[in-house]
Amino acid sequence: MSIFKVNSWKDLALHAFIIIGLGVVFIFIFFFIYLPMSTNHGETITVPDVRGITLDELDDFLGMRDLRYEVTADSGFSANLPPLAVLKQFPQPNAKVKENRKIYVTLNAERAPLVRMPKLVSGSVKNAQLVLKTYDLELGEITYVPDLALNYVLEQRTDGREVLEGERIPKGSIIDLVVGDGLGKQSLESPNLIGLDLESAQFAIVGSGLKIGETKYEKEGVAVIETEMEDGTFTYKEQKVSPGAVFKQRPSAGIRMRLGQMVDLWVYSPDSLNTNPTLLDQ
Image (cartoon, rainbow, N blue to C red):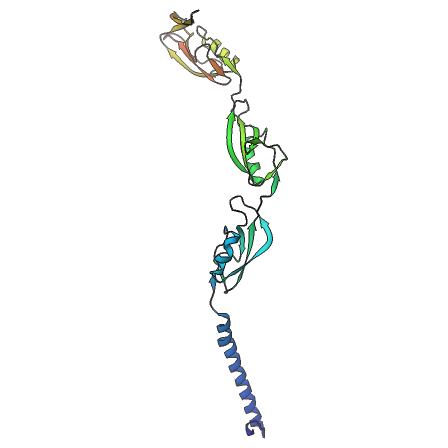
């Protein structure tokens, strides 16, 4: 036991040096040998992307990679993912973590939350697209029907039925729109313009709710008049018109048309005739 006997200051210093040396060796062994071996120091795992994976698949998927998971209390909803699929994760994909690290996941709701159907009727198609996106609803088919209001929503539908403003529907529902085509339901017969001067013919077209189409000038002007007989047959005869008068029109007189459709005109215009634009052409 003489090694521990202190007879002088030299012995005391020697003992202190031995104790300090043993302490340094212990610390080195603990932190740089034992601890790295027991904790796999320097070994990391790349976090996989688990977004879109369902809860049933998650345990096996992470277990094969020596990782665990925990479902957070938060939830969300995406119509593009199945129920109970991972919406969010932490740590993010490609992060470096230790073996057996826990991955926190947020799942897609089993049922879509309900939202109130917004009012789309009487608004434009463009406005409807913006409103549907705000409410997390999807735009479906757009069906055009005869109506004077062009691109105005007349009806909003889902699953083949009309859906009313304020009705609760699942988020992500597909909304179909019935929209006006701008032409209207009203129909009429095209007026008889043969023999009228150009300006009178144009006024007759506009006054009927139709539109002036293309006007052509020709040096020879002979109108072909069609007459229906009592037995249902038709007879045709040629008729000359005055210079500057309409001798042909398309569609022909008496054809059923809708409001806003165009009527083309052919005008008898000899070389000497003035063909300056009319007031309706300007």
